[in-house]
Image (tube, rainbow, N blue to C red; front, side, top):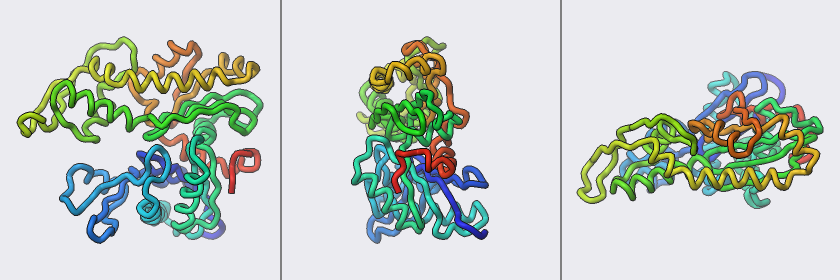
Length: 335
């Protein structure tokens, strides 16, 4: 393939997505790396590595090098990016050599964290790297008219961070970033089941519980689910039956923190734009927006319409790829 390859990367805490201009999403893999603890050699990345979480022998460690939307382990992130770029090239059917990359960063990231993301992408073979703020990318990916002078309120609930932003005329008017999202909800479930049932469960089990019977604070018919783990008293495997009402209670505090972030952002909105939000409502994206009942709950408490983005899991990646066309209008992007 001739010409400059342009790709957008959503370097997320839970998943890494690669978007290519003509092909759409060409890669969607968990941001997980399996490493040999003795040699520091990367054994697997993405889906293969995620399968190993909590199931590996001592010398093999499955780690998530991204934490709260920023790089926690630079070397491992660089290696993960190199491997996944190779994989993306195979999937797309061409070699990704020296691409122009747009990558998103949490709006609350410090300049040091932004530089680390830029350096990691460069070290994986990119020619030029542009940074775009995550909520702007999510809004572009959700088909919102970000370059028009009307208010677009986006709530992106990812794995490590929740980003709430009011975007108008290609820039962020008001924005708040909360380092609490999908991973924290999983942690809440782990802690609740540990406290109530003396049962230790893993991250993947907690994630399944959240997806199947996790609910926002709304009325719903009770659902029950078998949860397997290790009994902390006997040390033996044990199964307990957990109700969706209990999980709803476990998630309540974190969801209220997300709601408070939305409220703070709305309070700092200029009055002219507040009128737009009443008419146009709020768009939610990211994995957390798929929690049962969250759309209904938010529309009840903030009393404006709440819409789900067309591809909530892929909005940010699609937005980073598409933003190449609107880079000139987006003043927030630094190169």
